[in-house]
Length: 250
Length: 285
Image (tube, rainbow over all chains, first blue to last red; front, top):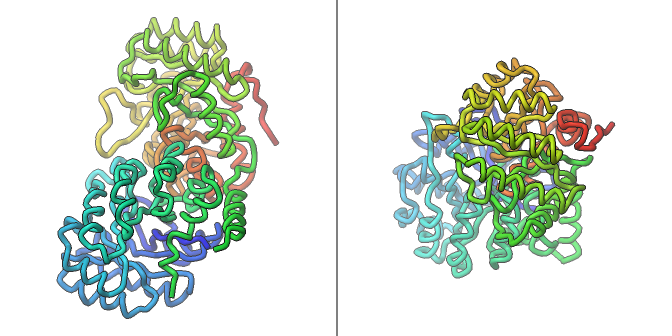
């Protein structure tokens, strides 16, 4: 089974994306993705990102292979209601934070993190949506600090935390926490460079890495290519889906 | 998942990411300059690069060194050392490495002499300019004239960085200026993603400017956009390996909506048409 833990639906401001939910789903099914964890782009620049979450619930209600990953902003007062909505949906396994767009420090959002764990959900913290060099000059959003995500996982050992969108070098620097904390994973859609993923696997991180495409920003096939080009079957299969099996367990 | 099922899944995926034809990558650096491996010799460098390229289905690579220390303003001596290194790679793997000659427009006379040594003498197949001077600089003119005389393409680094270009780093508009000054020069503007849709428009009026797909993320639709705006013969596959992954970069071409003919052009034929005859390559049908 291939599980994409990090894909999106919705519009983007600087360039046209094939971001309709049906388009994203079809692009992923075409390359053999069996489950897709879909988050809304519509809320990224919204004052209240929660308003865009309906798009991923609607997609999940329409297609069984779509798992909704709503964006939760712990600085919006009504986040408990939004969390409850995710809990009640039944097929949501993760919620997502965008700390650079909500302008908060992940490790300080302890109340919300604790509530997510209590709701039985996991948390994906997205540290990058776009390379800063490629963003609109009036809307530059630097990467969040991946180490802060590891600190969050360390403080909340009962919460599954996925580091989303981190470059390979940042993941390598977090090898220690990733090996020590059994609740911390890293999604690999932004890992690039010769032997970069193989290096992470050689560092012992093979069981801590999760496949993501970052579609529709990225060509979905790129996500697969980085996994299967250099890795043996077993670690490749683990990253493509085995490690994320907790997301699809009943 | 059983191990047999896992192997079947991975094998199915491997088939998806194999390119449909031979692949010529026009933008590769030695591991001496970038990448995850400390190499002890030219041989080790070329062997590691070749192994990674072959795993992705890349058969030939245009290689240029920026010197092991990657100075932004290299001296003529550093350029010479860089080129000697790449010639060593070519000699170690003549069926894999297509060497490009690295020069600096800050030293135009020395650059022309180095081009004569490397292209005319050693049969390197192209020129590489990086960030010592913007392409509007008059120091490029003697280099461009010599490239035209020898029939070698010139690959010019370019980018539009929101975070700010280096002082000598070319914008696509600078490359357009170079192309206008030298209409017989075949220019490869590097880094399609970095140049972004604005860069595509900047060079669109100049048929002697081609763009490579090297560097940047595997962004959806950017290669298709370049083909729509520039035509099918002005886009070349490049990876920027080892900074970028060969197979991830290939996905920009084989993972989008391009048809088989367009893929062959981008992955092989368009580069073959630009390289001089002594590169020894033929277009494929």
